[in-house]
Amino acid sequence: MSQRTAEEIAEAVQRRSVRFPLVTGIVEVVAVDRVSPKMARIGFAGSVLDEMPHDEPGEIATFIWPDEGREVVLPISGSWRFPPGAEGQHWRNYTVRRLRRGVPGHGTVLEADFVLHGDHGRATRWAGQAAVGQRLGIAGPRLHWVSDPEAEWSLLVGDETALPAIAATLEQLPRGHRALAFVEVDGPEEQQAIDAVCDADVVWLSRDGAPAGTGTRLVDAVRAAELPSGRGKVWAAGESMAIRDVREHLRDERGVDPETMQAIGYWRHRETPEDVI
Image (cartoon, rainbow, N blue to C red; front, side):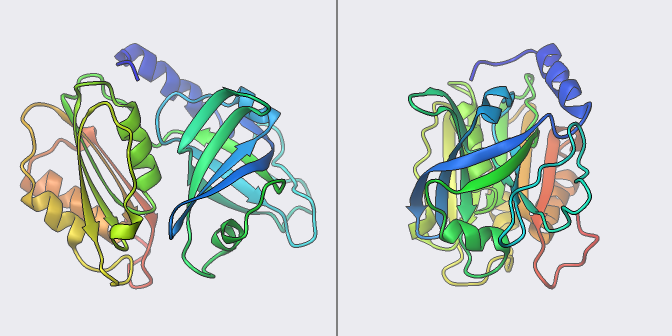
């Protein structure tokens, strides 16, 4: 990914802030791959994807599942309101792991990684049995990473729910850019190959059977890390309490400018208060 100017980035952010979603439509599953025991990469195709912008890595697409036995109903054009009678729609946000244009036989293909964690939720149950030919609604996209052309290095922190965004970002940072990533996963079998051209150092943190959303592995790893000098860019996402701890450590103990940080609570452990991030 070539380094963009501040003006180009500001234009992209402004374009996205006008309304959500920019595009809506129907997509069909064209590929299903298990990239690890608990991560499924699902490829989607559909003419709507030809219209979907892709300005930054790790953008968010919203997938829409209909109520059981019903057809997908899309939001009213230019809004996030559904027409009367569409109360049964179920939606969840997922990272765009990769958007590939000009794929023979499909046109544009969007790949998204789904964490498989048993029977916990409609989306993960669907992903566990996803098959070619199934159809979903899609809306989006939404920016979750905003480039900083003045950043001399990047720090990326998160659990497996953030891994698709971290991997996508590392693969699109420019050659020679210094990047440090801390990724917490269930165990060594959940580590993934990341095809980065930037100067990336990825540190995998294993829970070794401990429940997700528990412990202090991420903040402990960041606390022990030697960060490069100069202006940095920080992106952190995952369980809300863990990400809050990382953000507060960097701000209060390292003196990192909050303006250079994006900290996103993707999910909450059952013991995490609702007002955290």
